[in-house]
Length: 463
Image 1: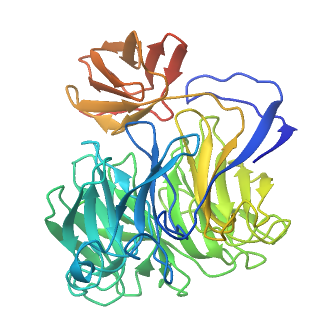
Image 2 (image 1 turned 90 degrees about the vertical axis):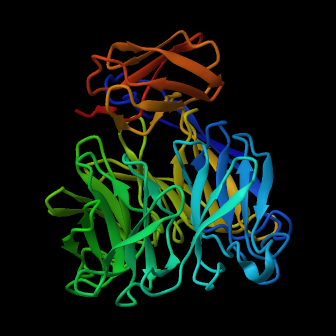
């Protein structure tokens, strides 16, 4: 089911050029309604694009549903909405393989996905797992509460050093959560245990910023117990950047670093109307509230915003809007917010967030609503063009780089800020290359028979 209406957008493609585009058709499409049986139900996670161009995520165990073994699932979905369950948790005795995955896995540079379950494993405190696109799962670590944490949430991210970094919501030395590092083979190191004063119960994914450090959020703790934003080095030195106090937000949900170098994020509650906020914060900790939700335009964003290829930010709220079932919104860096879509239950409710596929379209999930009230997957097209995405987004000369894209078959050139690179087209969605000698920091471009595609973020050449 598609719902269309016309609105005007201006495209600043990638980060290096800008052009005006005419009025475009905005199209919302409900792609999948979970049925609560073999395909799971109530996903709490967003989506991630794989090297095959498909989208991957998880569904959560709920009641007597949630997959063949009632422990939740990992699924893949084509951009047009064909869904396949590739793994059902609790396939092993006592759910030793994990249970209740409630966050999106991360795509590793090896093409596999790395994620977490919030329960199950050897101690029923959750796991870190690796899974192939074909559904072969390997449990890398079982959490045990102390000292390595429990209830990992969200999943880890892969850093430029090849290791994965993540958080647990509870456990650790003080029972208030921790930051950990885990190697691709499963060796885990606790980097920091929160103590309340510096935050507690971290929530939302960390990101690695252009300075090489990691930035994240805690949902509680800090000066007013309303949550914090923090910076942490790869060796575990943590700095509290900001403590929320309620009027400026409460329960932050993570941040994204924008092309202007600042960080943008959301809080689930707090703000002028206690319905949550969108904020900007500088790397040194100066916070500006860009928007306070008021219910009519949304309430309770559960994930951070993303920055799209034309420079604006996009996100979702879990409630509020015309039917109080949540919204999709766009917001500029100056704080001008536009409600793009209000959910009505039929096509989903309680939206979890958005991701932009390299075909230019946004995709997301809802925890509830749809034909069986078990959640949905949807797409939102705003007429933004296709682009390419590098994995990772920085590296030294000679470093192996993967390029994700759409319709890459027949590509004739790849260049790093104008410097040509040798490359191999693996599939129509994936190119393998390396940083060429003489490359400098800038955009990556791929020339295909259909035109030239530009990276959505700057690729940084490391010394």
